[in-house]
Length: 166
Length: 421
Image 1 (cartoon, rainbow over the protein chains, first blue to last red):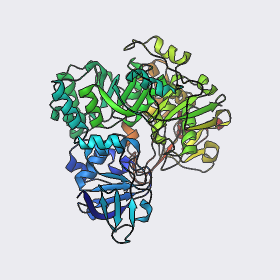
Image 2: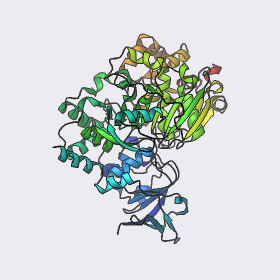
Image 3: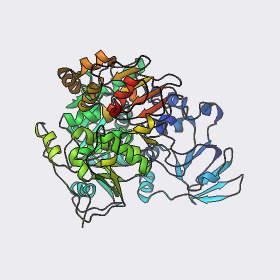
Image 4: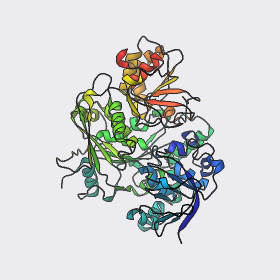
């Protein structure tokens, strides 16, 4: 079963990529270095408070701003298991898929509270809040993105083409 | 089928008529990377087993973010792009010898051609739409995919038609128009959409103003900003050694738009975007009454670091001094702009007024390299983002404005209205 279960950390609207990973740390793309500073300007204590497997739940336009792929890299390396948001900025959405960071669009994200335990069932398209016992249906992943995912992501798609074309 | 300019560019690249919302895969005319984002692409490229770039002459690396290197880590990071560029004998590798901010440098070099599809691992790649090209920011992995295959996939965006009306008044520029648009539609008002700028105002805007306008399309969440070519565009391109023949596309009458937004530019006054979102625009007449003391003014970036910005600043600062408690940093966007500004006397004027003039770099705009703000400092910047921590301390405040408001504020030591000087 394809299920992610974790404790929720809440963030607001327009969490930009500078908040996710500030440019002062972009002198490297090493995931472990980036992970030490993830979400630092949004909540300087976040790295200390969170545990691997936790889930971020946020408002509208998560990941707006810069195209830096360091943002999903930092979240993933810190152990953030998934990001659920009311909406995602375009470049971040694509980058998260390319990096293998699971993200889910949920209009009812506001109803989930910090500290709740939620479980995301990817096969059934459902997010269950274990504390409130509510169930929500997340926006389906676009078919083309599903196809990319089933090929193992964008780079595997490229590798398959390289092999085919010699 | 009646099409928008964005649909036409994709139709031409795909070889059939395409419509908004369709997913297409097409050839990329120019792929842009920089010293921060390309190393991730290079790693993905190498791991894929690829040996060569699909189209080496369609790939440009511009070293602009942390260059000249500010520390050992950024030097090591730069080395990754340099080694790759030499190994693949890249024709379009721009390092310190010929440096500039990518979105000012590439149009200057004739590497942005109307009708092109351009992707860059930098969100402000949308700047290039000012020349009637489709240009959008992507991540490093998407860049790697294009380096390997010469192509990438796109969802053809629906378009928002932005109708700009009237002649801009004194000290009103492309920057003010885009800040006003973002104020109106919000930072996600154009999410996934194309922003197509039209209307009689376009005729009054030179290329510098058009670049500023398209540059901040991303700040409304847009996929691309675009302006169809006209005489001004053709004049800009005339003395350039273009990479290939331009293809001029124009939206059909009756093309489908998901939204139409009008802006009364004639009655617009300069806009200042307050912390911490570009959508927090206020009229400069209001902002200047609030007695907002300014610690630093920054004139530069891919939004407003062009020759006309330096000209505007020099005109305001001529014979004046930057206020005692205020610092002014000016960063010309390219070496060519720096040289021309020097020839025209702008640099002397700016330095005599108390500005420090730096080498071209993205630098202070993203708080990664010089001009970093201290705790609780306030900055007026001609840049594109006033997010928390963007230019330094997370308690610092950034106010986005045009170069005239920035220069006037440097003289006054507080946010000032250039029309009152």
